[in-house]
Image 1 (cartoon, each protein chain N blue to C red):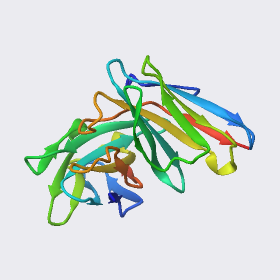
Image 2 (image 1 turned 90 degrees about the vertical axis):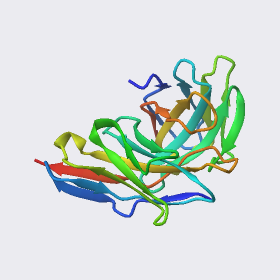
Image 3 (image 1 turned 180 degrees about the vertical axis):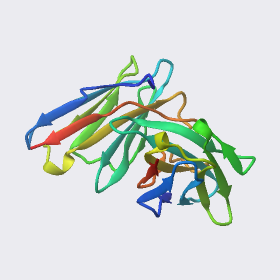
Length: 114
Length: 115
């Protein structure tokens, strides 16, 4: 158990809908990272937050947004969903923001868009 | 830009034999290098990392990796494979000297260890 909790584990929705994925980092970790894993794109970095502030941005679509709350949990919002958004979305956390240490990954949220 | 290449989609090895999973990288400046493993229906787990120092890095479950700066490689190795090592392995890199803090992952290599 990595200590990172993601909900929901599975989500099935329709095109055009909006969903919110939630992540609770390990106790004491200030950084949260979101990654998307799909068969054709591999593991893609989306966005990183550190202590409530956006730190780095990757290949995140404009239809997607994220935030980190004062209690350090994070939410990834996906809107106007398309079939191609079907993927496994991982949250990871680390103590600091320099990323020299290991990342601790949750078990992911599997999103299916029909 | 930083990138990672894992040239093999799958590696097959017999139990008890040595295994190698290949990784090459491209970054501006000095790299931080990582290996992660993903078991079915699970998140990624950290195996080992190279930051600086000895080019041979030892990690979890008997795995090790060798950093080769001239060849820009960071191959994962294990002297004797176990069936339980069968999983998806990811190499990752981050440039030390840039403001980009996120890890870039390779496409993954599936390791199949046959009994």
